[in-house]
Length: 363
Image (tube, rainbow, N blue to C red; front, side, top):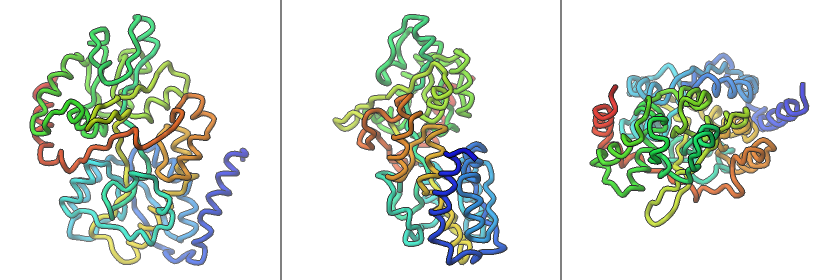
């Protein structure tokens, strides 16, 4: 075992020691979690899954899914006991779940690690915390920019440089960037949420060659040079940069309410469906508390660049040599530099936005 792995193992062991008195309390139970992509799920199983099972005596199952799929299953299970106890939801899906009464508030006294949550880590008071942040910005293929003598963009205006028109890609409404990013762009352009057409008309000038749903598709096109510019998250862009790809993650520099925000940002949260109760509810709280272990979140920061959601985790992430090598967090990381749109404001117009988008960008 390498020194780093041994250190992580010891840290996680110590982190769970406080709960040793309750070991085997949940023996024979299974906690089913509707998670996110397989890469992240695997990391969670490796970092604290085994120790969670050892501490509680319960079996942990994390199923691969997406925020929208998880929301659909939670809505179907509403008003009855679901076959799953924890679900991963992004900002907009969380707003929809709360409005429908499909998720419940949590008892934060059962999650001692939540005391160290960073600013913005609980998007809706009382409901579940985020287990990672993601910054929305622009990923560019620097090699293509240099080869064609194009000025490196410094903000969202770079999307509309005629030199990159026809060499860009955009997300579909099913991609997690779309709702948060588009709402932030509309607010930056001072456009009413009731009328997205002016924003979409402006985006048409980019002449996107394709639309992507899976962020991995955007990554592949940027790596190959087929796309020179793609709106995407820090995780996808920094994963490429850490691997030596000629990419750069560029801020949006949005102008909202007299302030400049480098990035829009969103969250992945753990939520508990409304029908979970009893020992299953207590076990679900233990899992969510475990997900806030700084050392576990650090593994994701190291591999993808997603900022941890605890203050201790953020400090550890900023001190990583690889983070400094690719300037992952800049000279000073601050949530004051990021803008998080209120998804509740977009909800009344969401179907209209999607229909308008599909009309204008359908292929």
